[in-house]
Structures are given as C-alpha cells and as structure tokens.
Image 1 (tube, chains in turn blue, cyan):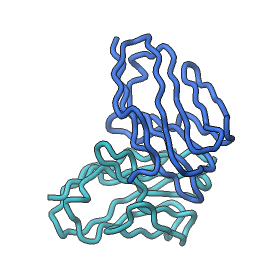
Image 2 (spheres, one colour; image 1 turned 90 degrees about the horizontal axis):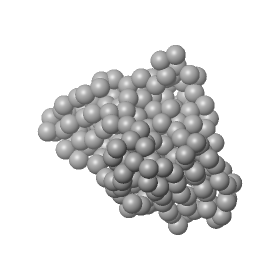
Image 3 (cartoon, each protein chain N blue to C red; image 1 turned 90 degrees about the vertical axis):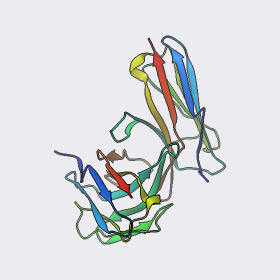
Image 4 (cartoon, rainbow over the protein chains, first blue to last red; image 1 turned 30 degrees about the horizontal axis):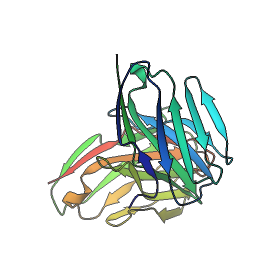
Length: 109
Length: 114
C-alpha cells in the first residue's frame, strides 16, 4: 500500500482551465515536495513546503501544505500544454523520501 | 558538472542472472538513494545512504543490495533477477537528507527481466 495517495490519477483538460491535484496521507511529514517528470527523464523538483499551512506560488502554480503536515495540494491556474507531465508529491520522514502514486496531466491546445 | 549519471540506460536479463546498476554523482552529495518506478505506482524507495559507509533499507529492499564505499558512487546489485524486478530504476542524490534538500535524479535505467 502506498503511504501517499494522489488524486486524481489522470487528468485531461483544455488549455486555459484550472485544476487541483491532491496528495493525502495519514502520516505526518517533515516536509512535502512536488516534482514533475517528463517521459524518459527523472523527476525535477518544483517546490518544497515545510511549515503546516504554508502556501507557495510558482508563477501559475500554487502549492499548499496542510495544517497538520499530512496532506498537500497543487493548483494550476490557466493550464498550458507545457504543463503536461507526471506530477509527484513526496513526503520526508526521517531520512526517507516517500513518493505518492502520481497524477498524469495532459493539457490540450 | 555531469550531475547524476546512471549506466546502463537499458538492460535485458534472464531470470536468475545478476547484475549491477551503476550510479555516480559529482556534486559531493552526502545522501544518495535508489527508486524503482512501475506504471501507476509512482516511485518506491529501495535503499538509501546518508554518507559513505552507511546504507539503509527503503520500502522495497528485497532482492537488492547496495554499498557506499565512496561519496561519489552508489551501485545497486540485483542478486538473482526475477520478472517482478522489471522496472525503471532511478538514482538520486542531495547535499544532505531529503527533508529540506532537492533530490537530483539520474536519467534512469530501464530493466527488463525475461
């Protein structure tokens, strides 16, 4: 069983739409990271959130860490075809980084 | 800097064969880790190391061995390959532990076990 569950698993939308990806767990994490992965490549870090309730913005992407540090969300405003990819959340506990199940996003022009 | 390098890029094995997946980084990072990625499963942690001479198990360590004799290298050994080990393997490194530090990933090794 995966410690971190992401939803939805797949998301297919038109350019200009907004979307939210959720990352949920029953466990507390020291921090929560979001990565994006392109086909045939390794994941690349988007952001790290550390404090419960923390909100970080990266251009059209908004990341939030839950107050209890058990969950997180990624909101994309006005999605573009360049946002297409696999989005992965990852929670840090002790010396381990545990990845979520992933959300595959496709944005059509 | 080359970052994190992995070899080979592709490998096909027969059941029962052994092999070593190589991983090297040139960023003087203390923390290194191995993940496997299966369709629909995200990445699962196999083994990790917080520094030379120190290794520990992740979520799915069975069937794999690691060692960390130098800061730069962190090879992953498959002792007796099984079809269930067919996957894409990623090596990653960071300056210190993963909680507050970016993980830099290699390009991956795609392994097929027949």
